[in-house]
Image (cartoon, rainbow, N blue to C red; front, side, top):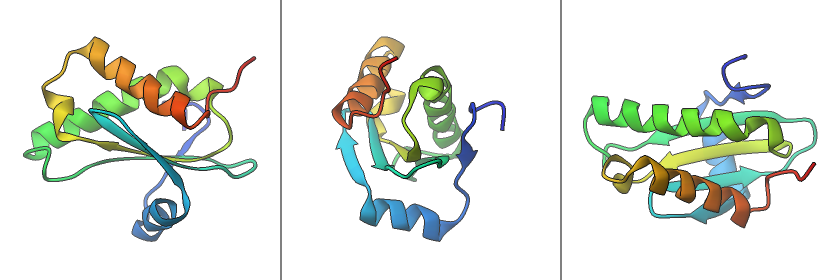
Length: 114
């Protein structure tokens, strides 16, 4: 899939549940990251619950997550990532969201230093 770098998207409910149970998580004000390190695996999922709002708001939140993920995808370690939008994602500025996104990536040490 070109749009997300060399990452494939998670589709199945059981894949999401497995990462939620086994992976490590990191929280910030507007986003949660679940990460499970595995060799030669590049998968990503984006979710927004109904707490976020109606379908328009949920889709907008997932678009924000995907757009920010595209910037970092070439430098991320192998593994499976799930980004979960929090309610605050609709009310914050883009700069604050970028900081939150980078914060969760740094906490789990998933950005490769080249």
